[in-house]
Image (cartoon, rainbow, N blue to C red; front, side, top):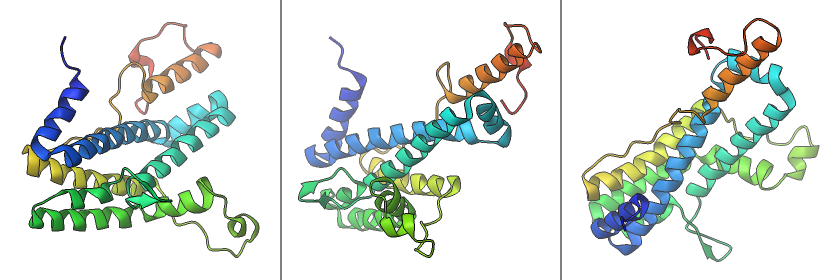
Length: 223
């Protein structure tokens, strides 16, 4: 029986990095890869005003729920990946574990600096997690003069993701002699852009502006 690709990759990491580092690196890589993919789908949906118009016209309340969930999941995920190694007496899967698993002093120091940068870039995510998502800060909810949540935006999320990716990429370059590539969505039949186009075409067909069947050329450039 052929060994599954994911298991083969994990075994390769362990072979090159050792059990402790290789296992955690593999788990972190899969977390970060999935986070990039999911974030890419969010960006596809809200990438320009025309796409948001399609969502609003099709089902504004439903898509508001979906987009809010995707946004909050992304901030939670980034916060988790940059959390302390332990919380409430239990160990966490976090990039902050990696420097202590590396033996080479120079490599360790490089990772410490990259992790500190990632922590800083992700600070706004932890503020949202602590005072709005995981917990609802009473003062923030009831007091108009309370300290506002830290500014959050697509560009800031992109920066936080890039800083986390740099940590993993440094480990990969050192041990595997290869760079990692994280993709913001991969396209295909099941992606957000496909949904947008189907919604756009369906609404046009409903209004009698298109036949039910259509080719890709019928979609406007922004879709």
